[in-house]
Image (cartoon, rainbow, N blue to C red; front, side, top):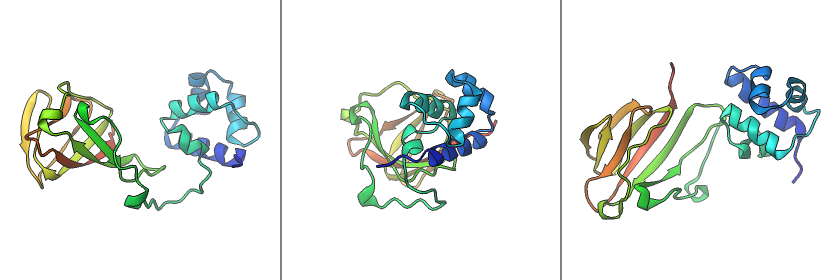
Length: 187
């Protein structure tokens, strides 16, 4: 596989523009010079994977996307047969499958598989920076949100701030499937 420096640079520049950050801000955050970042963005200089990793972290994008040599498109198709079926540890309360990840969107859909009650060891709520929309596809859950407990059944929905402590708690040993859409919040 040949890595195209122009493609890598273009992706970094696009991600930086979307994040509304200057070259100087990213360079400072990564401990490199603005000149070096400019050369990387223009495809004039190769960068060590460690440097690309720092840049991807600063831009909040996956390193794998920067290194991926597939062409950019505004259509994201993810056949079920090509999806990694489950990611995460069921004994920690959930696993999930990513449905599609657009490189240019701040929306990330996933199906969360809530671990059955007797196998669920997770009791501490989570927080994250994105807002979250959920739709219960199968089963029932308790949504623990900001210390309140809400019973949600198949077909029920909720939208909430991910910055507040929340947790999906299984109601029974049947588990549950929840369509979850993470949305980067607007301050």
